Structures are given as structure tokens and as C-alpha cells.
Length: 143
Image 1 (cartoon, rainbow, N blue to C red):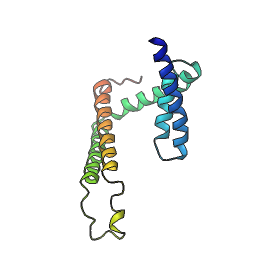
Image 2: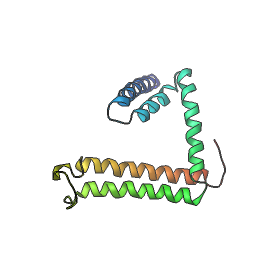
Image 3: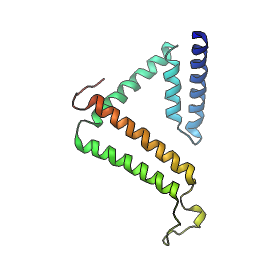
Image 4: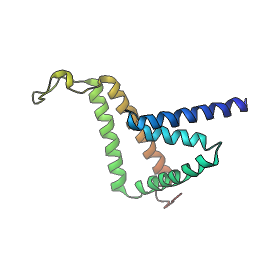
């Protein structure tokens, strides 16, 4: 069973790395996929671990800095609210307004799929803000 798990993480890691590299020039979350692939490969290879650790430290440091003051927390929550609100707008998809200069078909491109992606991104961002607040707020921790 352990061999299957190891093989699975290796295959998924390499798929994410290759997909992430492709998504750097194609539409998609290239850097995120590339980092996720490297994080999986870091369980098996020292060279991947050396590349993941500095990014991980910087991410924790940024997360800790982002919740040390109330204005930063408020801006983060406002950003989450904007993502969720825009996602709801895209899902609801009201008629194009009178001031819209292009054809109606160009209003809110992507439809409900784009809206669902925005809502999902907003929920992930909210989870990250809550995680950062609970783990780093007031601690001054710079992991």
C-alpha cells in the first residue's frame, strides 16, 4: 500500500509540475500547480525540497504579516467579500446595463462557471485569512 501511495504522489507531482509549466504560457494557475507539484515531489527528492522550503517560509511570513494589524485584516476580508460578490453577480447574471458599449453576449463572459470559480476562490481566500488569523495573529511568529 505504501508503494502505491509513493507512486501516486510521484506521478501526481510530475503531472502538476508539467501542467504548471504549460499553464505558465496557457490559461491556468501555472505557478500554483508548479508549486503543488514541487511540494509533492519534495517528499521524495532533496532538490525539490530545497526549492519548496524558501517559498514555504516566505508564505508563512507573508501570512503572519497579513494579520498583524486590523487594517490589513479588514482589507483582506474586503477582498474576500469582493470575490464572493463578483461570483454571485456572475452566477446571477443580470441583463447588461444601458451603459455597456458592446454586444450583450460580451457582458459577464464565462457565465456561471466563472462565477463558481470566483466563489470558490473567495472561500479559499476566506479559509486562508481565518487560518492566518488563528495561527499568527498577535504571535509575531515568522515561521
